[in-house]
Length: 204
Ligand code: OGA
Ligand code: MN
Image (cartoon, rainbow, N blue to C red; front, side, top):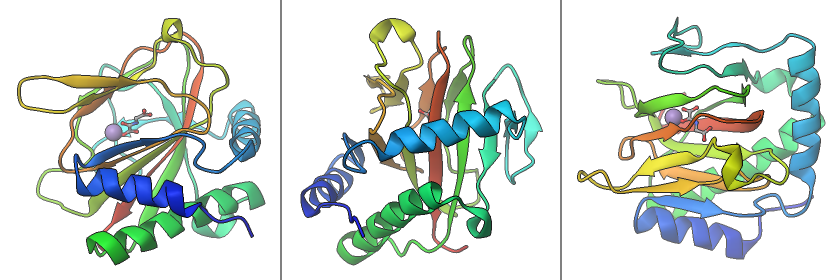
């Protein structure tokens, strides 16, 4: 069984303990992300994705002015082998975070997301007001050869003054951040953009 390398885990933990956000390339080591992308495209083609909503719960309220991606929630008992392998790696990260940073993460929920050309997700926080279930956000990108011109960057706001960092949604790259702390947005994508996005929770 392939496991996440200690160097990669140590890097993410170090970033989370410091600034609270992390960009890690080649999280799955090699091309496993390509299989996830391939499957994702097939599921999308088969009409399994739904327009994403905003607000709590998996239904959410449609708000095309706020976000215009389509998503497919992954059900824990109906994962493909490839999806399961990726979620196993996320679970290693969860255990390491609990061991080193005492976040007490338990549950996990995730969806595949596709942003067709022209779509975006305006500035938001992943933790809903008054509910502190979502603690840690993970976004794993599934795009080959992404360039600056393709748009679709993840813009993560780092301070109250509006300072930010733009991150390219490059295949194999994992972005992790403390859900309560960082506002972020997805800039309009000019080509199809795919990711697997998940949240670790304090209770499931
Ligand atoms: C989200 C989100 C970021 C991204 O789905 O909540 O912010 O880069 N996604 O896809
Ligand atoms: Mn978000």
